[in-house]
Image (cartoon, rainbow, N blue to C red; front, top):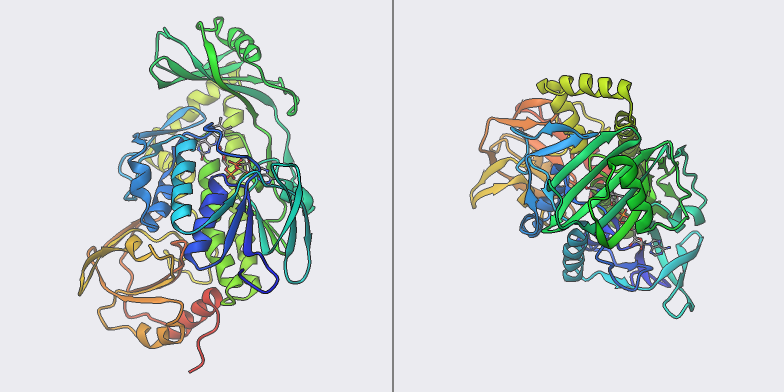
Length: 505
Ligand SMILES: Cc1cc2nc3c(=O)[nH]c(=O)nc-3n(C[C@H](O)[C@H](O)[C@H](O)COP(=O)(O)OP(=O)(O)OC[C@H]3O[C@@H](n4cnc5c(N)ncnc54)[C@H](O)[C@@H]3O)c2cc1C
């Protein structure tokens, strides 16, 4: 029991990728966590099929990326509305998208969560909640359809696009309705002439057939200006009829393993925090899945929230730190909706759109355009508003190679413990050690030298290696200084804002 009268510090609704990542982050930072998942067990279904650069980086920051790399395939391309983006020469140790099924991502996250001591309650659907000054009482419906309740200091809704937690906490979900319907089926097609049909355009929309394994394809049909009732059932027959309308044939598809439907409705929670209730992942934002971003952004929401929520429940930071979760992540979600709306619009059928796509595609040949879109889709260009105008401030720290008296180490290796790091690269010229004393219980002070004079930073270019950096557990730079310019008072302010007041001597 984390606190008097509490069953846990944090209850997470939903054991999808967002909920699992958040649970791991909370455990790493020393918070007690329970995950309540309505399903009795995993379905093995996979909507998502890929991880982007920034997500691979955050997994690397925790020392678990190799598990994911071993279970997927790196690919040199991504796309914007089906128009190819080039992923060469990229300022990251993980430049290429990793093709990996969502079911595998969930299995690997669940294994890691188990190692960290996360408790998952299966067959436990959140059906009610009541907040008071000290915590949240959460009603759960269990397998026997019995009701039980759990008390937690905070509740995080990671319960997907139709989030009960969002509805029960009264948070609005404004946005734009669907303009199209997509049907998806994992089906057998023994003799498809091509293994890879991607967004083939036709009068009513477009279709794809992507090989999953020999003889098995994921067929996706997208029809515009046909919006299905979101609660209506989805059948194999509907998928077949849709494919025939678009492609003129059903390619002999048979034996569906999984059929699903999605659209391009784009909605976002008006608030990511309502008192002791927070929202993350699809519970906070839904959108057209173009560019494969939703799961990635959900995992990154979790990494932004985890250390903050853990610091608050452990009494190391004021509650107001949680508001920065909304101020930092809501704009990221807003941009996600924006770029996926643009991708859905660009995918509409018609001669005018064919022409617009051709123009757009010819612009993407220019390096700057390619880079701009790639940095957005991979989320490597995100900059949070921190009170410091150094070019690195607010951005994700590059995984630079360092030298310490003990040997070589990279910046991300320093983040494996999920502690904040004050990195002094000045070779003893700085005054960081004296300042850091006040935060010695919370912030790791590391003295090292950068192996490179310049660090590559997406959306910025090369910047001179700084002389000191304060890195948050999520890998974003809270404060940075160049040689000769260390301002101890600015460092003290940044330490206090992000990690609470200094220890009393
Ligand atoms: C066709 C398609 C392709 C996609 N491809 C990609 C891709 O390549 N890359 C990418 O990044 N994203 C992709 N996405 C999006 C991605 O699948 C989602 O963004 C991702 O699953 C969101 O994760 P989540 O954990 O937030 O929510 P979910 O995965 O929806 O998980 C929510 C969990 O909460 C549980 N739950 C729901 N209600 C309750 C309740 N009341 N109580 C307890 N538990 C509850 C659910 O059972 C579920 O396990 C794709 C989506 C689609 C439709």
